[in-house]
Length: 168
Image 1 (cartoon, one colour):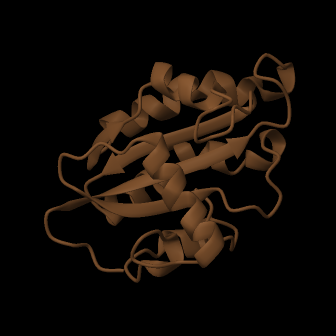
Image 2 (image 1 turned 60 degrees about the vertical axis):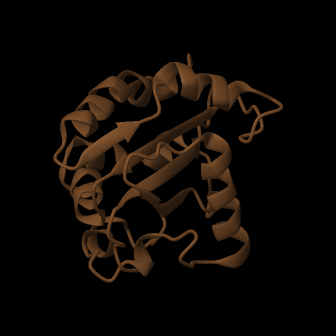
């Protein structure tokens, strides 16, 4: 997957917590979200992230694109390039939390990550992100929606993602 000129990389990362947000068993991830998001927002190549209030509204709306699951934990962001997102995911504090995902998330082998190109300046909506997610889930990787394995230049996920290919 080649980086088209004049475009940035959008990503949607979904997770379903095993327990309610206020359960002590998920407090390490809940309490770490501000740290991880703060590191992301200061990272080289970071462009934009859907703010917490909008994300909460999207996640909890039973009529919305995400289905209103009260245990949904997701991130929608835009990065300058695959390389900058890859660096953040695998070479920052994010990796420490990623390594503990099985403690907190109940996803099994389900797809939970999608990327796609957006024109510079575009801020994707959750409806757009979920359309890409569902397309990847149903049709596999394409120019419309893809995962790490479609990016020839992406190498870190191969050694740091425990062989899952789609996780982030």
